Image (cartoon, rainbow, N blue to C red):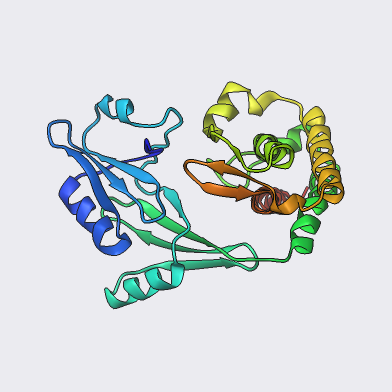
Length: 280
């Protein structure tokens, strides 16, 4: 599997030791000439550590790779947070713990290059709560956007953050991309599905989030959710239906609906925060 995460580091040996010791990443291959190491995660994913500013690393990555800057977060899914917490305590490492009941817990620690390593472990909620949260998004998007002018939609909660308009279009695009997977799972239970991840920043720039109207997209968002809810209500064992993916393993409709509902929930809260800051 080609890695989708690329980390530029100052010292390959030091970074490799850090991730091997604390997170149990293992070396898959190393290229001393081009100064690259590919690491395998316990959860099955891969990360490429590189040194220098060359472009050779692109020959070894997935097309939709992510290359954060030091100081930014990157996320690792499926780790055991409590075990990592004990490891950090024993080694006197500073960490932060964020818990979102029913969704997951996130433990964050800074690596030698300043990256914020964010390990996510899923927590669980009932099927009824998952479907209710997904359904509530249909009304909540109207509530969050109610009364906003075109100028209001361009307000941001802090410098460098996305505006309300950009955030709304992003969460709607995320619903649309997840809808494709959900529909395959519902229609062809067990189907082998090749994920085609996207870079939200490229979609923001490539489809001009900054200057677009959002009315059509909001209507589409609500129709997609109504369609999925109707299928989940009428198809037997709908939430248990699934796709099989190379990089994420089995993804049930239950898991995908929860993921996209939680994703939208977080962005609704960001838009509400922006409104509160600007009192609109």
